[in-house]
Length: 543
Image (cartoon, rainbow, N blue to C red; front, top):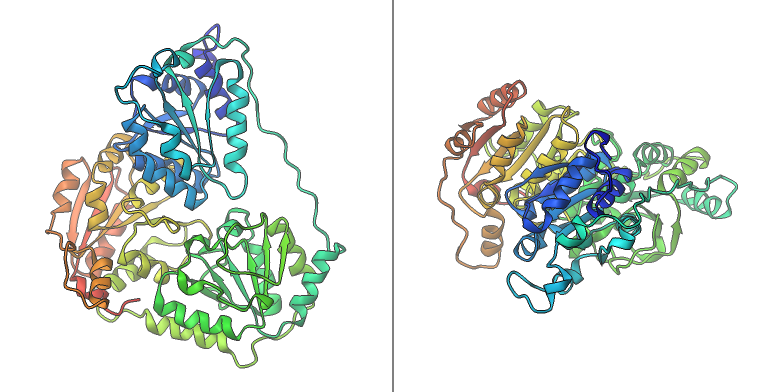
C-alpha cells in the first residue's frame, strides 16, 4: 500500500487493493458509482491508477489491452446493476480472448438486498455463462478470496472472474488484515532425455512435409524464437492464428502469415495442410478459427503441443503433449536432426499465391491504406484493429515483425474494440507507438472514448476506414443474393469530431496524404485521427 496515504486500520477495500497490487495490477478501468467509491479510493491508495472510461464494455477492452501488452492483470470496476450489465459484451470478449480479467462490481448491502429493488438484478445469473468463477467478498476472508479469484483467472485457459463487493463491506475495518501474494511458480525442466520429447523428435525427423500451426498460447509463452529455430531445422512452413501473428517475423521465408477468417487465404493454406504428412500444433487455440478449419487435417497426422488439454472438438489429434510449449519447442529445435522438406516447394508456391491474392488492385483503397501503414508504422508499432471487412484484409496484409503487436477481438469479434484496446496498451506502456485501425461503424459505436483519449492525454493515432458502409455485412448480403438493408452509413466528418474532442483530425483520400499524416502524428502531443475515405466496392473480392 502507498505508505503516505495508508490508513491506521485498513479497510476491506484496502486489503483487496493491496492484494491486487501484490499480484502485479497497476491500472484499473471503469465507470464509478456510489457503490464502488470506497474501492476506487483504495485502489488509488494502493498504487493502482483508476482510469475513467466512457462505457463499461470499452473499459473491459482497455483492461484487456493493458493485460495483453504488459502481461499484468486486467482490472474492470463497475457499479451495481446497469454498470455491470453494460460490461457484459466486454466480459464475454475477455472470456473468448483468454484475458485474465478481474471484474469488481458493487452490490447492494446484504441488510437490504432481500427487500430492495432499485437497480437490483441477479449478478450471478447475468454473468454465469461468461465468467470462470463468481465470488462475493466477505470481510473475514477478503485477501484469500481475491487470491483465489486471481489463480482461477490465470489458469489455462485464462479468462474473467467476477467479485461482488458491497459498500458496507468495502468500508469496514478489516477484522484480520493480511495480503496474500502470488506464489513462486517453478516449472520442471524439459530435457532431450524425456521419453515423450524424444518420441516427438522422432516424429519430426520422420516427416517429409511438416507444417507448424501456432497460436496465442505460444505467443503469450514467448515460444516464437524456439518455433523459428525448429521451423528452420526441419524446413517447416509456419501458419499462425490472428492472435499468434508475429510469432516468427512475417518477412521470414517460412512464414505463411495468419489464417482462419479469409476464405481466399484459407483455400490456399488448407490445401497445404491436406498435403502435409505431419501437422505440429503449438499453443494453438482454435477459438478464433472458422468452420472451414474443422478437422483441417486428418487426426492421425496431427501432433499437438499445449500447456493445457483443450475443451473443444474443432480438431482431434493422434498425439497430444501437455507441457511447457516454449521450453519443449526449444529442446526439439536443439535435438532434431534436421532435413530437407517439401521437395516440390509447395510452401513457396503458396506464399507467392497469397501475395498475388492480396496485392493492391488500385492506387487507393483498403489495400493501399494497409500497405502505407506497413511502410510508415515500422516494426516497433503496436496496432489494434476493429471488427469488419478492414480487419480481415489487414490481418492478412499487415506484416507482423514480433508477437502480440497486433491486438484484436479475434475470438468474439466484437465491434468498437480497437480504440479501447489501444488506450489500454498505451496506458500500460506510454513509450510505445500505438495505432488503432477502425471502420466508421465501429468508431461511431464508441465515439465517447475519444474523450478518454483527451483526458488521459494519450498521443496515439486512430486510422479510420471510412466507406460509409457496414461493408462486411453488405458483402454477405450480396453473396446470398439479397438486397442491401441496414448497412448504409452517412458520411460523418470525423476530422471535425476529433477536433471537438481536443485532438487533431484530418480526412485523406490518397496514399501520399496518408503517409504524410502518419509521419506527422508521431511528434504530436495529442491524439491524431486520420479518416481515409474510399468506396465500399473496393472490398469486392478482397478476401
